[in-house]
Image 1 (cartoon, rainbow, N blue to C red):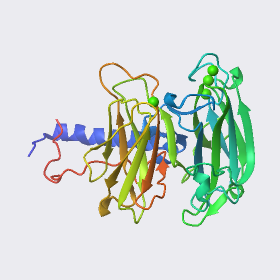
Image 2: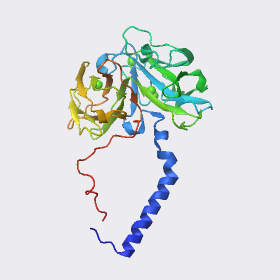
Image 3: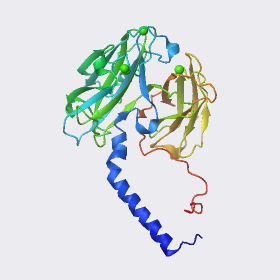
Image 4: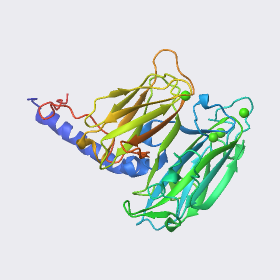
Amino acid sequence: MLKITNFRRMKFVNSIYITLVIILLTGFLVSPEVSSQAVPGKDENIPFLVTFGKDGKISWGDDDFNQIFFFSIPKEYIQQFYIRVFDPDCGGEHDEIQGDFNTKTLFSVYGGKGADPEQHEEARGLLNGVNYKTGNLLASRVFGQEARYDNKYYSFGPFNQTEGEFNQKWNSYIFKVVCEGIAGDDGNLYRYFLSRDANSNLAIEGANAFTYEYTFRMWNDFRSIAHIYPYVDTGIVSVKQSNFDWDNDGKILVVSRYKRGIEVPISNEANWVNSTIPIEPAEINSSLDFQFHKRQGELVKNNNVVITLENQRGDAIKFYSSPIGGVPVYQPVVTREKIPARK
Ligand SMILES: [Ca+2]
Ligand SMILES: [Ca+2]
Ligand SMILES: [Ca+2]
Ligand SMILES: [Ca+2]
């Protein structure tokens, strides 16, 4: 046992109070509800989504030149909202140039019947040659090289929740956002934010964002670890992961409450590699943590990668941009007696 003098105990108690006050004051800024509205999410440590123009090479890391994200708005939220896109243009800052900037990117927002990927499998965009642009087109815009939106936001909306497709299970309205590289060969890097406001990022409590095929950019920093958090729903006994164009860039590990870090086979240049990971009953209704550890030594620069997951029946598994139930943590075998003493 650690012996603490009264004075030291007072200091310790005071520091706990101060910490609590700081947590309460800043809670709004760091709550999961807030971070879950950014795509990629705060916990993912992923700088950008990426979509190349359709004349790009798949060896640059985008296998299909489109990306589909879904936003769920809880039924209780009755105000209008906006889907904001950061750096929607392809030019200037952030984007990946090939020759000159000539990529045009079409962003489209869909609602109504056909938008919800749980009720309409084709909306997920995983069936080759099948139209995934289902639902009512609510808004769209093409972006080229536009200084006006370089390193800035463009806001789609306002939308009303009832313009989405209602999902009974999640008691939410679902919206679909499609990004397509309709011309050119450069990579458009961008992010989303679901907001109550057109001009700033104000999160909607209980809202969420998810996808079934995630195409993203890694940080150009070999110390940086990216994460994605697929949700393991009831009935899942195994997960098949597929990764594309990982450029042999270090390791991909799967961590969960019950997995310490299973290494999965990785892709190299413009190829898909897959493997199957068994799921324990105790992992149901939580998220797995897929960790992307970059190779040490010579930096693999501008690494774009695609990840898809499916269950044992071949059904796609969602990735949430913020994990449901929080970030998975280790459950060490011995926990009770091993709380470290404060110094
Ligand atoms: Ca830009
Ligand atoms: Ca170009
Ligand atoms: Ca961009
Ligand atoms: Ca790559």
